[in-house]
Image (cartoon, rainbow, N blue to C red; front, top):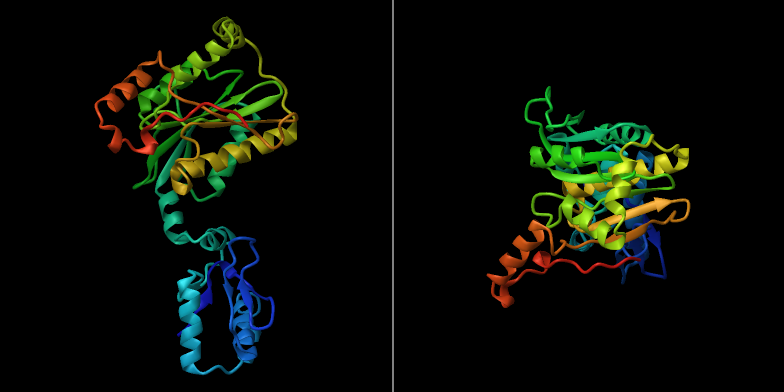
Length: 315
């Protein structure tokens, strides 16, 4: 049987009779009770991903013991019996324990619509085009998009607006019926998220109402900001914001769809590690009222944790 370690993992020696598979702390299973021949065979199994010439030097371990070791590796989910992918992205996601090829197929069937101008929108579109999406397209006020490859459907809309989420952007995505990931570019920081729209229990009106609660002058300031020219952006912040937004897009497309449901991240020189904020439906917004009504009609013992509005906090 031709086998390999998932994600091109290496095997590292620990104490006598003990090895670990992989070098990621907390995600590298440890095998114990090994003989020196067992250890050498496992180390060489890891070396196969890096040097084909070493395959011939594998230590002689009996068939029964080999099957036992392979069964232990399979139990830990680190053994594969197909050809190793050559794409670094596939190897990376395989090491995460996901079906990397199926993930790639899923992305290839998805299109992302991007609305916005400026360096962050341009860089984001380029990054998304590089990760294997079926298409990355701009979209207009009504969310119109054409020329998609056969079998590729719009799955997400990203808007990149200056100073505040533009009402035309919010309306365009609402008309498209897609999940909406807003990116707001301000003079010294960029906010990515939270995800809005279908089944996200949060909408653009919720965000506006929360902003008004925090600053009663927010509506007046917003109207004026719509007329301002775009602020100059530091090149490093452009890259950081575009990469964070691209990661958020991939999360929303299936890698971790829950991560951005009620969460935004602000990054900038003052917050290089990101300021995380949790949002909840605003009680004066229609979507919040609908949610409250749905919860009132549902027995308390049956309410899913995912349906409860998350508490608002910042960290």
